[in-house]
Image (tube, rainbow, N blue to C red; front, side):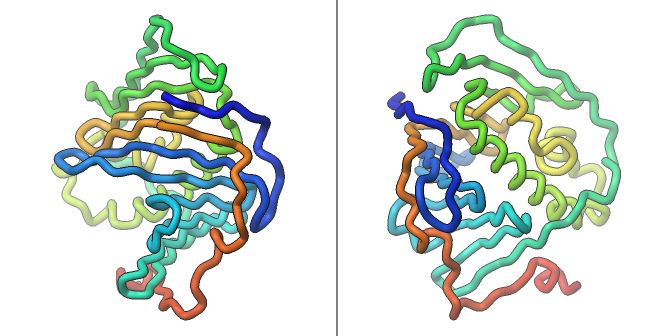
Length: 227
């Protein structure tokens, strides 16, 4: 694993210095792919790398998510919603911490955790405590904003299709895997594996990285749901 050690993320608006992270990811049964994450005090952008026509943009100021698709010149807008319901299943959570020592990342200690809900392993996590805290905070904000939207269809879902891991991971405890530091390897059981390949905290974030094309059609998730 190659990492670049630098200073704390400096303040910037639409451009300037930012943190950038590169991950190798693989969804269960799919081919591996790479993602890039760029974080400033205002924005979180997730894409496939430089020149990627499609990307996800999270505005940390108004907690709105924009999912851009170049193929149909559209932007799906996910407005911030609170999780206004209780879990339809009782959730019993447990965390196991491994005492084994692992190589540090960015001079930060790495610890291995197993996160369980209702007796099932939900997350297999290697986390670097204290590494890029601004990035961890941005991810907490993003996951929290997404949870409200993911809670909307929950009342209409058959209870037998719900699992404790899905409910905890996506809606009712969406940031629990971030409580231990920056994930350097994360396996969400049956869903996805993500591994940090590299990072730097002095990336030149040009303003255009956070621009949404003016001519693209915008549609909210509420409109797609017919609400």
